[in-house]
Amino acid sequence: MYLTPLVRIGTPKFRRFILDLTPWKTLHELRDIADVIHNTAVEIFNSKKQVLKDGDEAVASQIGQGKDILSLLSRGFSFSD
Image (cartoon, rainbow, N blue to C red; front, side, top):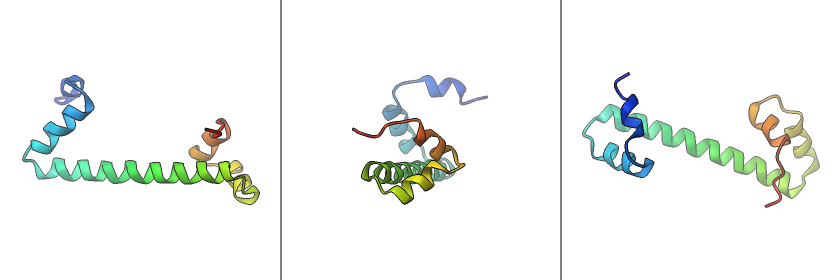
């Protein structure tokens, strides 16, 4: 693949800076899509984490019985920080 060596150059912040300077509209659209996906995942994770910290039994048990990967992973971690 052509981009494989490029992912090892510099820090993620530096690579993001170079990406922002690159005049390639499609690449900028992909960056924006990745940002939305990342931010949405973080929001979902933090909301589930907050529910478990607050101790809402009904919602916490629903999360505990969930079949999605986030629910399965959440059962294995303690969110007491």
